[in-house]
Image 1 (cartoon, rainbow, N blue to C red):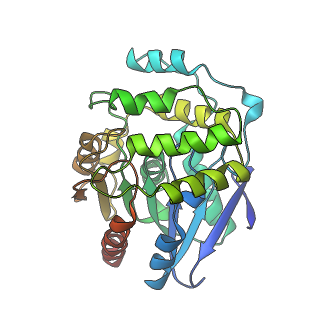
Image 2: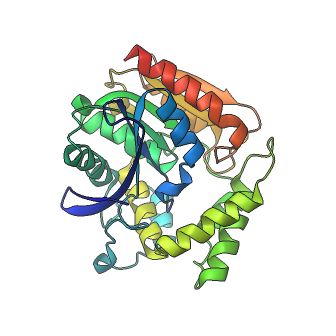
Length: 293
C-alpha cells in the first residue's frame, strides 16, 4: 500500500473508487488499523461516487510509531483524568487531526467528507473544529465530545480496554476476539471468523500496544470539545448504537446536541462496532449527508 509524508510523519493509506470522486476520509479508533474499515464498506461508498481513503493513524499499523516518547502510565493517567487534573501527553487529538489534514495535502485534496469511528470520531470532530475549511461534512460514529460529566463505560468494557497488553501473536488474536465479544453489538450476529481474521492481519501489519496506550492518553488529555463543537457549521451526522457498552449513547446524544443542526441516528442492538447488517444504513445516511454539503 502507498505511504505519504504528512505532518512530519509517514502515513500508510489505501484508496477505493474514482480519483475524481468526492473525497471521503475514514478515520479509525483507538488502536485500530485502517483494515477495520471493512473492504465491503469502502467499496460500497466507492460505488456511490466517493473517492474513499482509509489510513493508519500514527502509532498503529504501518504509519509512524512514537516509541521514542515512551510508554505512559495508564492507571495514573486515568486516575488524573477522573480527578480532572492536568495530563502530560506525548501528543493530543489535534496532532492526529493535523496528520489527517496532512494526508489530504499529500493527496492534493482541498476538502473532504470526514468520517470517524470511536476515537476516530473524536479526531474527526477535532478536524472540523481546528481545520474548518478542510471538511465538507462530518460523521461521528460511536464517539463522544470528551465531556467528563457523561456516563462512563461499563466495567467489563473498561476492563478489556485497560487489561495488560498481549505479548505474542496468539494472545493478540485471542484478545481481539475477546474485546469484540465484550464491546460488540448484542443485537447482531457475532462474526468470529471475521474478527479473528482482522486481528491476525492487524498483528501481522504492526503489533504496537504501546502506541495504543499513547493514543489513549491523547484522548484523556484532549479534554472536552463540547463548546467548540457549537461553532461547527457543516452538515453533520452522529451515529450511535443504543447498546454501546464502551461509549454510552449519551456520548452520541451530547455530540449531536453540541453541533448545530446535527442529525442523530440511533441504531437498536448496535454496540461498539459496525456489524455487516448496519453498513448499508451507514452508506445511505452518509451519502445523503454528503449530498447536502
